[in-house]
Image (cartoon, rainbow, N blue to C red; front, side, top):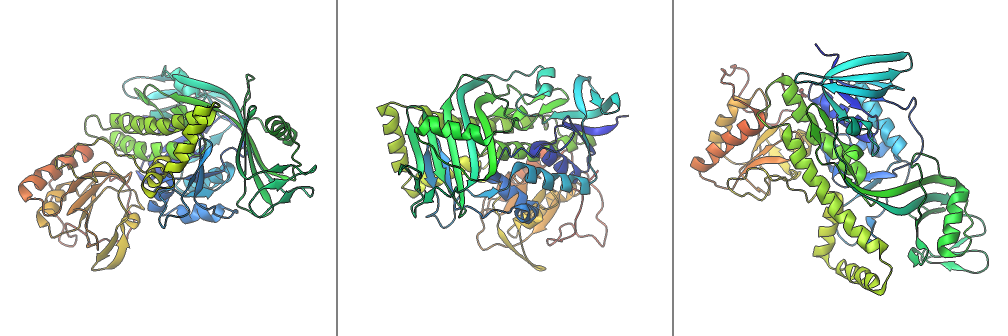
Length: 533
């Protein structure tokens, strides 16, 4: 008998999101956080990319938007010292929600408490042991040491993860000798902001908008809010900094002076943060009953992607843990967490490493590279490709794909759906995180096959204006496990569906269907646990 199903170490965005997803799957998590109180140090400034789409699929995006107090910025993003400007696209592949990390964590903590999860703050895990049946954590709490046991433990405890070290998981990579400082401040009375965003400072010097590169480092100036400056510096330094230590305003001013050679008066600070860039990827995301997610599993040498990647890790992991704990997981299901999210981490690592090359080069060849790259982003196709790359929406998991359907392994598109009960969408169907067979054509034989998995999946029938497939099997993480091509013959579609259902959702259960419960529902809106026990 265990104390809980899953121990989550760390109450940052990754740990909190994992707890919420586990609760939807009917699992009991316990969060242990070594810090006694939530921290107000404004580290990350927002979330963006694919995680926004996922939150919408869970019906939570409006809740996060309501917690934001800043204007939504135009879709214009830094990429290694150049700009990815998506403002001219009618449907940009990348959006951002400005939400300071402490506000993000507050919203997530409220969510997991509503779902019944306990967060123990001031409780530090100092040791872990595991065997074939369970994992034990030695905890140092405010009232003394104690032990807690669970079926699994997930380290969501950041880049300096003690859990990763105790599990013996290597974390190879590079730490770059650069220190990045970011500030949001009000405009000082002695500074004039021109219409083009340039700054005129005392003495008549002009600091242009955008990026300014000098021999001493990189400076960036931009703003989306009247009366507020967004400023950034990068310098090569050999000293060590603790990213969790607050950044004094004077330290930022000194950095601007070193990089630009001029004084920039600053108003009242709104956000100040300092961070270093590391390029590391855990060799494995699982060691027996111990798993890693978020910064404990990967660190990337660029901003704006870590929270997105970490929260998406948890959405992939939660339902697979639940399947194993509930006893129905097919062989190897939990191992696909490493296979899929390690691949996703490597993809993020690819484009952030490319940003290092663009950002750090100082010679004429590097300047030429930046110029050519910026020219390429004038054209729509490469602009969309880079935007999707940053967003993490270009990930396609290498799943079994007998008919080579283009949607298999991808994030399910949010199709508008028409039913006898009215209009709905794929996003609305995913609110409860249940797996779904969505039949979009007159294919009763596919619905009949899925009847034997009705204890694990929902079966929905609908029409859509654009039919990309006759049927989609959508996992709880909103990725498509199988798709029937339009008018695919039954003798190929039927066995492929049966194999996919067994591959992801275990053995079938042949049971009589109650008279008052049809085999497939026309998109009922009632809630249900994510995976039936």
